[in-house]
Length: 116
Image 1: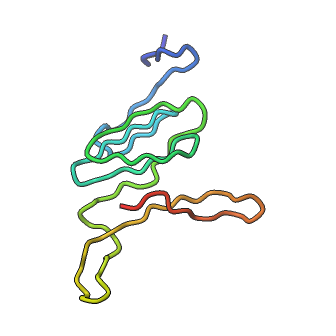
Image 2: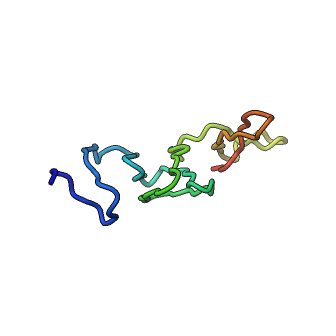
């Protein structure tokens, strides 16, 4: 038998090494994400459902399809400023997360899937 630890699903065996200090670890269908207090992870599952995880972690095994990490966002440095039109005062900051998908004969389009 190899040096690998067999999983509890008989048809798979996981062999390899990955750095656990990485924010995102993807390995043979296994996806692990760890975000800190000021970060958020935007994730798409195999059926295109969108999840946003803040201040924590996420781990999933995809038997069919895969989990896509769309973005890791630092919430203290968002992209777009939001200003009051009258006073010009800064109200806050936002950031859009987009996902590209095929729309059939029209080609690919980008869709906003999360707004932080």
